[in-house]
Length: 179
Ligand code: AMP
Image 1: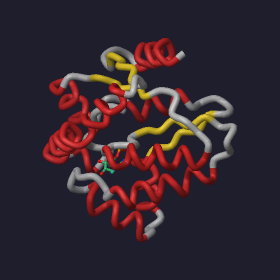
Image 2: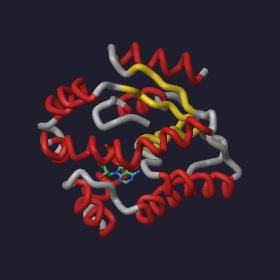
Image 3: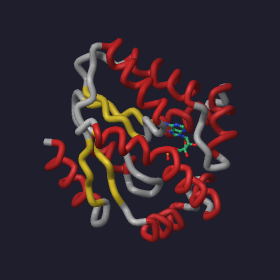
Image 4: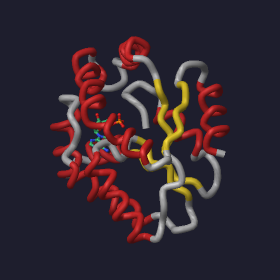
């Protein structure tokens, strides 16, 4: 988990760059659907372009379908999911159905001023990273996703990682904390 611009996608990709590990990014799945022109992609774009979250039932349905395709022996790193408390509750149900469990929740913590600077740099590559949409995404994160962080903290599953430094520094901290 982490606010927009925290580097969670980069870190999740690194973490899963070894056999037996799978990267499940809901943002990537939405963008893939959009590229392929599916109805799900069109619906997601409507929300993504405004910096808002895609509705929970749509997001959970997509994760549920993807999880069913992943063999039980593979470790899954969720990236950008769950982002709301109802999504976290739905994930608990889904994992129980699949006989799986959540090992650890990693929060990449970065200060707001640093995030705004990073998002400004990324703005050319992503239509949802214009300054206005980036700020909106940050506000939505504070409002809807911070409670999920607290939810996992209360359950004793949360590891907080300092998100400043090189990509390798952050990856090392994650591996040390999650080891
Ligand atoms: P990301 O690539 O993770 O930053 O996601 C990009 C955008 O996709 C977000 O700003 C949301 O509009 C949408 N999105 C990704 N994951 C979720 C989720 N778990 N719940 C709702 N919307 C999501």
